[in-house]
Image 1 (spheres, rainbow, N blue to C red):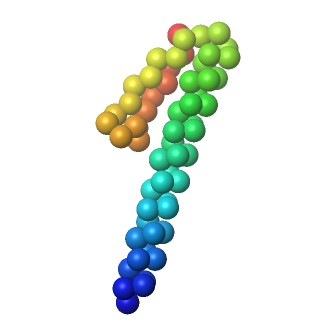
Image 2 (cartoon, rainbow, N blue to C red):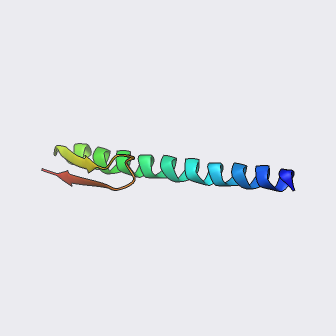
Length: 57
């Protein structure tokens, strides 16, 4: 039973890590796209950077 709990915790942590990494990569891609098009990226993020907005001006 304890082994199943450890496996569940490991899977949950792995999924959260993957989600945060994927979110960060998307955020960086959006900012780099603005820079490549010759514009300045303006970004707004919340505390954990889960919700973010990038605008190019």
